[in-house]
Amino acid sequence: MRKDIQSLRGIAVMLVLLYHAQLGVVGRGFLGVDVFFVISGYLITELITKELDAGTFSFRQFYWRRAKRLLPAAYVVIALTSVGALVLLTRLELAAFVKQVIGSVSFTANIVLWKQSGYFDGTAELKPLLHMWSLSLEEQFYLVFPLALWVTPPPLRRWLAGAALVLSLGLCFVAVSWKPTAAFYLLPTRAWELMIGACGALWFRDAPATPRATARLVGPPALLSVLVVSSLAIDAVHPRWDALIVCAATLTAIWARVGVLERGPLAATLGWFGDISYSLYLVHWPIFAFARNVFVGEVPTGVKWLGVAASVVLAALLFRTVEDPIRRSDREPSRALLASVVGASLALVLIPLAAPSLVRSVKDWSAIRRTNFGLSPSCDFGAAFEPTPACRTADNPAVVVWGDSFAMHLVPGLVATDRRLGVVQATRSMCGPVLDLAPDSFFPASRTDFSLCLERLDSGLPTFGRPAATQCSFDALAYRAKQEPVIHLLEQIARSADVPVVWLSELLCSGERCRAQEDDVPLYRDSAHLSIEGSVLLARKYHLMDQLVAQAR
Image (cartoon, rainbow, N blue to C red):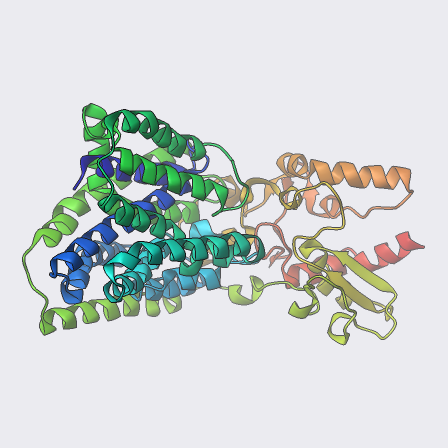
């Protein structure tokens, strides 16, 4: 293995590790995954084409090497993560976790997580096997690309790779604005990153050796580009220009064989991290995900650094005891070994499958945390609003609820307290009826999922942080600071247009704290949106519809 490529792997995994620790060191360290994709595409293509040209390529041996390299360490981590999930996750999180395990052992984790993700879905950073999406995507690539190389005549392989790169890149750039979640998770829109590495391997093979002067000229700037782009917000959408720059820079660094990555103490250190990079990638994310489940609100900085240290130590241990010995073993595949792999896969799925029933809670949290679409999911309109029967309670409603998801969550309460006026819902997610305010400006303070916080307390799970100590209430001053742009806008409207404003914060906040539950009813379904029961309770207790009607008159 080339030392410079191992050093690049070390850089990639450190970027990912520090980014996921949320220490503010690298703002876009997730681009380390894109570096991995390029390296993987380069090395796999180089290996396959050499064996194809020598007439020694075997699909059986190729996939056996892949299995020895990837499965043992991954299965150990999945098993240990399942144990942690049993004692640290809520019933709803465990139900989602089971699907993540199934996706991980079937190499479809990216598809599972794509289906689990969305605007109303629970936060992704709480999913202990979220990081398995990239490994599943790579495995899907390994299932398709070796066969494509095998059936393609040698002179056409580079053109095949180039065409696949252009097609996937074009699809990604179109889809990333149209279907961003799909563009992030799925192989057709991410294959171009692996294909950049594949094209490099195919085109470099017959190219003359890189002149050292040229390498010294382009290598260091390419390496610097990877670090700079991983620290600065170049593109608000990912994967797009930021990923393209980093992937191109990674391939340039591979081509140039940057000296600082091959020789000296820095290369030795980065190379060591490169050696354990796969194990480190596997172990680090569950540690941080469990910490974010256990701590309500922000995880303390000291705990984050402890997570970084624990990740490195456990990765080194996993590499020494599992990954490296099995990878180097000369054991050949057999039916008995295949049966044991299938059995282990089934066991990994069965262990957490019964887990949700082990968690007991007083309340029905699946009902409390269900999505509050208002009258109907169909009322989350697309480009055009249509007052369909499902989105109104009368033929000629007198009350219209207009806005985004924060208008939606008021609808159940208004309908429950309606005095035969009729309500029509005109709402669209992430599309507030105001200009020049980002969607994030509407969310309450400190990123606390209030329903998750209350569910953890109700289930008797380990829960830390100030909100947990105060029954998941949140700081009123921090809330008002976070909402300042909206508050300022509404106050201006109230003064200049003489439009009355009903402030829910006046009902929910008293003194220094704002309540997350009222009369033992959880008010929120996530970090900001009211639950259906919470919406009805507030409307009834504070006569919300009567207030609105009175103000309108």
